[in-house]
Image (spheres, rainbow, N blue to C red):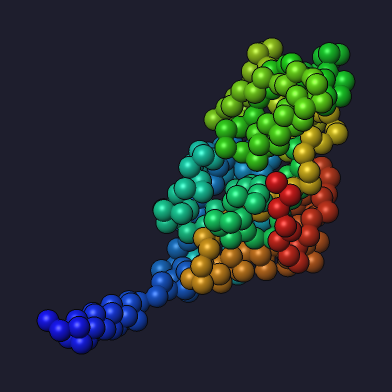
Length: 283
């Protein structure tokens, strides 16, 4: 085969590939598909009170209340909500096992590079909780050399690890860090004396101290930068309308005062969060 013939054959093959790519159908708009099939499948970790938890066999909390408020704008769409371990939430979304994540996911640089976040729903800044009356821990730095727990795969664990590294850099003993499947397990070990503290978001810890103030005491000084919880969709044009639908719903709830009302209901206080944009992740 001559050089001219080989070039011609290569060009024909390339043209065939381009034709196939052009003919390949683009993914359908996810929100339109949800409306068409009249069902939305949501991934949730229901072990994160008061955001999402199980009560009388149902998933309840701040997140479900806000979700149901927003889904009222899809009146003909049936909700299917899956309760999953947090460690499987984002991988499951990426694998298209469900349409969207409505659980409290801290907005981080690593996650934002792979997924599309809504505007924030709450403050996620990390702090510490200790056993009530433990005088050996009066400030955050007092966890140096002590055993502290947090949830595996969480941004709060990452904040704890970074804070422990700063303690070491300052010439103090780093904390011994234990990872748990759920925060409830870490709280149980803290109460039993197997941990000295737990790193969790201030919003969750404030509620824990309010409901179990006889056992736990919060150190109000944060150990990490200002962070926020958001909900999560997949990146790409096909998911953009769905992510915008939930972001617009959160912003609408904030403008109407309903977001603050739900925060007061579930946390006993309100949080100042931006609902006109997704903040640049601090961690």
